[in-house]
Length: 69
Image (cartoon, rainbow, N blue to C red; front, side):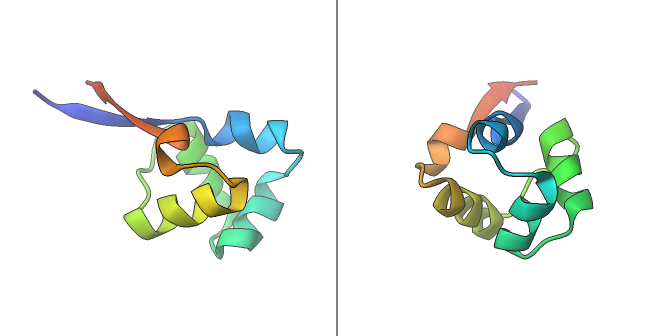
């Protein structure tokens, strides 16, 4: 069964008052990467997922979940 990663990055980013550019700077990627991630067009590496969770001070499971495609 094919699986898809879904994320709450945009929702959490907005709730914490960060812009896409600010988030990108904090994790060392481009704003374009954050845009693609938030649209669901990009699945981050484990390292980037953990860095995002650290910035938001949340467990990675609070940001990313698996869903049947």
